Image 1: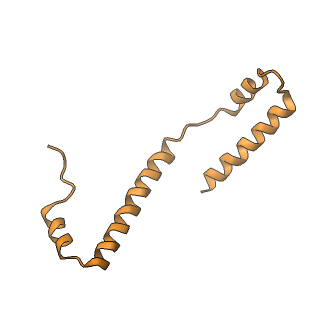
Image 2: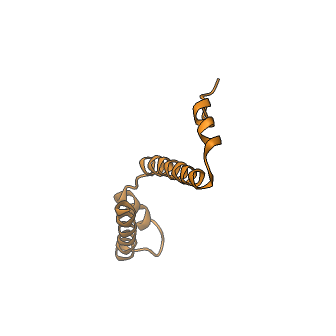
Image 3: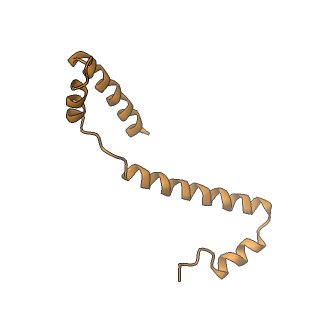
Length: 85
């Protein structure tokens, strides 16, 4: 059988809560779930090999070395911003 999410003890506490306590409990529960999802997403984020990407960009007709470097510069900026958050 699957693990119980709401034990008898938690159920009794929930029944006794007033609106303010329930709001605080639900906000806390939401924040914990959000952070769990965020950490899971952050750790499973795909990595990009920039050298391979540059090679593939250079294979596209109309994109030269200068344009490929400009594209990679923008990608690096975006990746730095995401890593900083």
